[in-house]
Image (cartoon, rainbow, N blue to C red; front, side, top):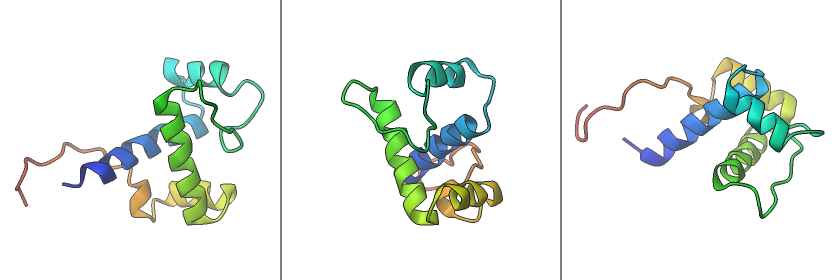
Length: 98
């Protein structure tokens, strides 16, 4: 199991929840605290932002670079064609299991 890819997949899922406007408390907090007047796709992280939110912005930038823009990133996330956007959050296998 590649823990880094697993981490990226889970954080990409969090980005998906931000895009889909999930009704979770976390999404509402992020929108009120960070994204008051700007889209997540346009937000520039600041020094005072949390490590997690900076990491989400970093992964967002990787996605934008990989897909080539906001519209194609969203389409790619919807179609789940890229391994970077795997949303299948099943339990990880024990170390060494096939």
